[in-house]
Image (cartoon, rainbow, N blue to C red; front, top):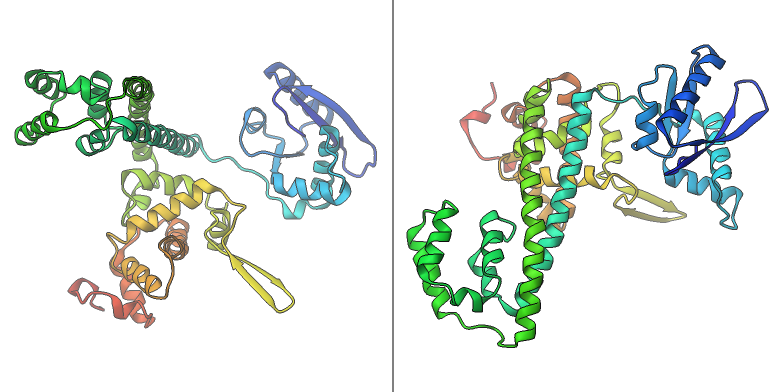
Length: 412
């Protein structure tokens, strides 16, 4: 099936028959359900394999719970390269793509993996954590625009208010979007505003008021101040709404995560915390048969490097075709782990001494962490720092010499 927003093109072939059918389906619940019933009646409930160029979307959600349908997601890059092999001119058409997907399914099914959806609780955490990250990225983009706007006419705000996406900072800039309007306010009104926001730092508040009274505007140009003030007020509104939405996402994710059977396991990893533990759970899921080797996750997440060989030349580089969200999850977790795990800190320091950049060192550390997490996940065993550090000493790992001397790591 070559899916589209409004209409899907289908190429269908029965096993052991050469003849193919070609038709289209409307993207409506009624049309899809009617087609599913036709397949059920025609093949008497026998298995039907469907190749589709997506793993998420309206079409997948309509088909995923039908018992006799087996969905085989095909990477868009795979289909693109397959198309180029037969149509080097670059010609592209939906019926052609449907035929190529059918060709991939019938001749290369051993290289595809049937998609088995996780349970509802796990998929809820997966979707919410990814959507939350999207909201954070959107808020970051708006905050960067806000920072650039303030630098043009009101740079003191960047020093006075800290995180510009904080509710107090947004409310302050909404009320006083320029230094001129702020200096026109009385100290009592500023104190009243901060008390209404629940602020209790009296000394810092008085220092802020003193700084406001001494501050000098960057520019007196009325056009710059007016346009800057309007832009700041336009930006702080969506930033405030996004912050509220992110907080609601955090609450819902935390509630779902606590109900999950694997919450204790993923919370045991040092540095995971309330934000990254659900993302690690979302990465692995609850189906232990999904991955057979840790390398599969390392490659899927883009943590494992890619080696290209041609003649005597060898080029090793990081993986471009991967889930960026997964790579970000493991790299951020590796960065947090060096603050709470002695062996992770030692590993990171060793990599930096060898000349690795900060991000390259984090990816190399994440590569090791995935193997550890994978083993804990497969055996349903929470992580134990003492056990792992003792194993490093038993194996005489170079990292063992870098570990701090502590009784808790003594061999027993």
